[in-house]
Image (cartoon, rainbow, N blue to C red; front, side):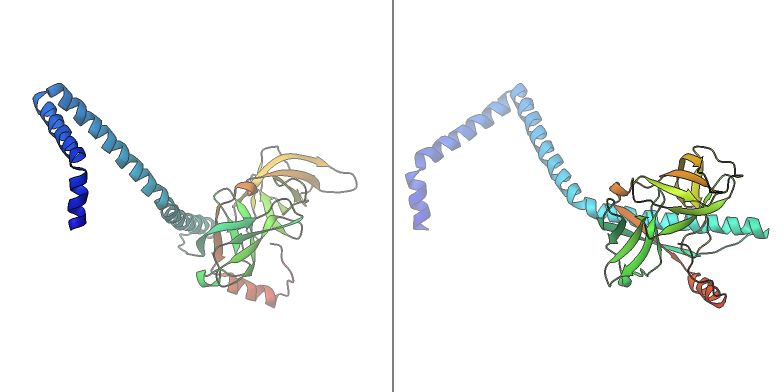
Length: 279
């Protein structure tokens, strides 16, 4: 206490000066409307700037939470759309209305990715505890990404479309002819559609989608666009160059696709001794 008193006593002249300045400032503001309005405007500007920057900092730290919420909502919406589209497709074939929740979608974040190897893989932040299993499909709003090949408790990896060891059953959307889409290990933006015979009509710009002939991906998911095609000697099939719809260098979030009817399909395939299937 005595220390504080001694401190104030030693600096009494400075404190008196500050007090007088404050009184003078107060008197100027109260007696001069112009000065008062300028002061209030300046104070409002300063406080507004402080609140704006404070809000910007808070919003920055909220971005991760907001982004995760949006990813989850997008996954739910896409799951509903996918189930509805498949129900409509089955209804058209059967001639009656159908209602099914055949697919479940789980959002995941890409934590590792490669595009410049011959065998590329992608790692996600979701694993067994999140319901992820081997042979689940991976896709985005742009199209197919790959298929899950390894799973741990909290993480999983997928064979990318950009992998020489994997191909996917695909078809030309316009005329329904199907073949297989595979990557040749060259440009990460392009793949090749194989096994399309010469008599099939093809045009540059044709859309290539999943055929639906597997338990991993439903029919109609985007794969790419025909960039070019030709006939090579000694072969009865086109050589078709496809621009992939997914930009594998900008992958950030994906959706992992579970086919709830997969056990039933696998059981039938084992009974028929189909062996190893495409996809």
